[in-house]
Length: 330
Length: 305
Picture 1 (cartoon, rainbow over the protein chains, first blue to last red):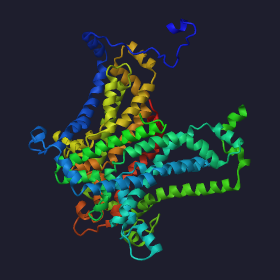
Picture 2: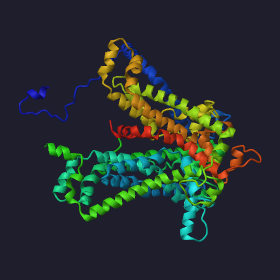
Picture 3: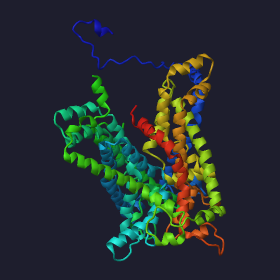
């Protein structure tokens, strides 16, 4: 480089880029075609996957425009009349919006308070375990529920908590006394049961990412801290916690980006006519209005609103994380 | 130096003399706590397993048990005697098998070209995939596409809309990038085209990855409840998960769901336990194989490029 030869001017190493290894694309369209045809097999392999994304991801995105139309299946996408923001007005001024928003946000808040920290705590406890075989066995067992379907989880919940022969319902009744409670039928127990299900199903699996971060901590740091007289609590606070902070930030961004995504299957399976006032969230509402009642356009508008808020949430939380000096997702 | 290396792996045990009483108490409490957690996780499943082999009277009268007093197979006998169950089981097995092959095939063939840094247009296609992670058309537009394609009430509706999981695709792509280019270059010099390189060199090197993601895809299809709920209305095309729901939901008419025989003994409660076990056992059977790989898979995914 030229700057090397000028005395007194040190080359700015930060700005020197390695020469690009990429082949320079020829400007001539014909020779471009030649380059492309050299990779014809690769493009051919790309084809089915791209077709999938176009058909099942981008075509639905195109279909979102029926949120601004009165979609009538018989008339199709192009034949249905435009109605502007009618469906959004209906959503925001209608009687359901407040309830949906409240139910969604309360579930999200409960998730952040109870479900989000659980895997961190369990990972830290597992990390403090000194007996390896216990650690491995516990891990193997607590990962299992992640692989079970929500239908199974819901069925287990009914078996354990219903009034007629629910094992846990009966056990609680024996201790507390009074009238038997049918937990799955009661409005007030809907949210606690949802949170319990999430804890049971996802806590174990959630520890993996934190345990991975913990495994990469240099053990010499602990040795040094111990020589300096740090107890276990201080080691936890000054070595372990900083080590998993990036993982916590990433998971926090993901969690806050997904505030609107109350798992459809889980909520739907726990919804009954008795608890609709607390259980109905945007996802189940979209299903109910769109599929059950055939209100495609209105349901699409609800879904679009949810999706747009989701994008803002993920971009916003990522921005916030970077402002706070953490590495973001992207 | 050698000593340091030897003790590095056992960081806590090497300095036992630092242990205070409080520290030891914590260790005991910690072990008990985590064993308790494992027990809470696994006991409901053990109870259901035991209950599926118990008589109706025992399920009704005993509060909680891990071993039936009287070992009966009424529920299973009944279940395997119904057309509804047999059909759901076969449907689920066939859809899972075909679906896994299709989904893994699509994922691998798309991931390979995306792993080639020199491919013109690669960034565009990667962004095409990444964008779908942030934004999607949602339930209704996807449903309308499936309907437009004439896939309603078709088994393909359970396979195609979820054919490529973008996360898995990106993980497989990163894996392919790790394969040394020199290996592929050698094959090319020997006259292989890209397709042959992929088939003869890359795929044989990727067996663990293929195994892992086959299992992940298979478990996802097996467990899927939303797709049949959305796209399947024909009762003859029910999958196991739908049947689980039909038999265990509160106020469900399980006799009607199973097209029960008039007058025959109907083990109503036992069937709930049995269907949960039947829908879970395959997952538990592949779990040890899953476990061998998943931690690694999740790790690869968490690494930023």
